[in-house]
Image (cartoon, rainbow, N blue to C red; front, side, top):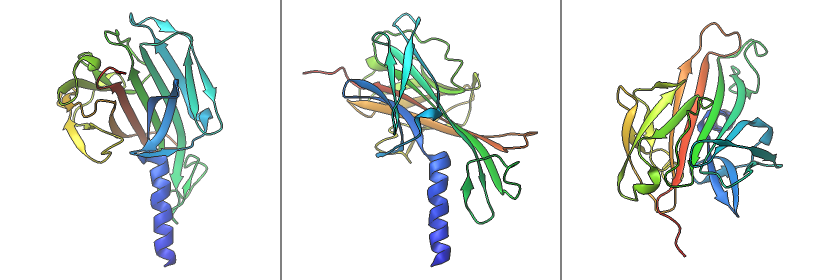
Length: 238
């Protein structure tokens, strides 16, 4: 029984460390950063938001502030934004032999069996015809190759996944991260490209995640990246 409890605690901790994703969603007229997995929405430390960026339809950057609330962060562009992106640094984590995750690098957990540093990113497109900037601050990003607001539900959206600014092959894309977070919709080709079905009339959350080996670092052996692309499948109608 004790062994079972420890295993469940370990699985829960792993979920908190790497399985949860990040996306942007408009709630009550505000742009909220959401940390969760599928329909599950978790409270999180807003200090972990490491950056936020907003742009107008021409791709020009506009000021945006991060309101750090007790259980999440709210993004507040100075003017209505066509594109918004956000980054979350989830920190370094090490797994002890008794299956406990410690929020520190392995130099501080010398008996660690695993060590990783996870980062979460999200890109939201709000206005049709928006020009995307380079988005170099997003170390993993799903870039639509056509305007996603013009595709429509039931149609395929062409996307390209970049990791550290380069096309990433063999990356699994989840077409509906909230509704079916374990269902792979497409896998990127050698140029990082894929076709993903637009699932919803409302909010679409397309996601991808990857684990990258790290060498020569005293604290981590893996860098974990998660990214999402969000947009409405159809324009809002009264």
